[in-house]
Image 1 (spheres, rainbow, N blue to C red):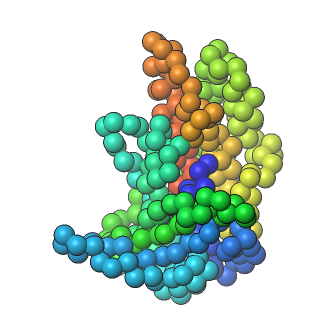
Image 2 (cartoon, rainbow, N blue to C red):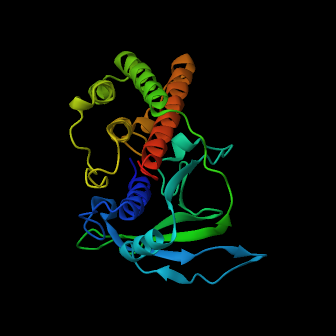
Length: 272
């Protein structure tokens, strides 16, 4: 799963954990969600008429921002918003910086919320410590009154993810043998959480923040995510009916994993 998605999820988890008094043992800059980041800053990015407001820095790093948010808001949520670009699907665009669905962070209050969106750019390509990225989160709304999405039960989302992985595995066995082992592993994880070893970003979920079903769903989504650039599942090409089948299955799997990651993250809001 792309680092930008993991980072936004980690920020939501950190805020909700602080509010609930759950320790966050490793955060900025040590957590894996901030690997390769030179800085992560939080700015006012709203527009006023035809002119954009000056980008005032509201928090210089994630630690400051999380503390500010935890002291002011009821909690945080993630919103995965489809771009619906007619020229390229979110699934195909997911391998590009800033591509795929928009992952907005909501800081939720009783009557209104703030919405934040990230922007990544390379600031030091030759950095010896490999921290090449500069990340800015822009506050794009400060009086957002949208209602939280009702969402489906986690067990229904889990069933959809299992079905999508299973069909993708069948396709791989017939047409992409190099991917069989990957999807077999993902299928094992989704069917039995005891088969799930720690994911790469195993430090983003503070202990006790998520109930087992939500944690299982998030780990399963990470285990089956292969939507990137060169060498990824997106990089395959098939023609005719096989190509149509590949696109349909891939888009279904992408949508299922996006829904799963967002739902599992939002299970941390409130009582978890």
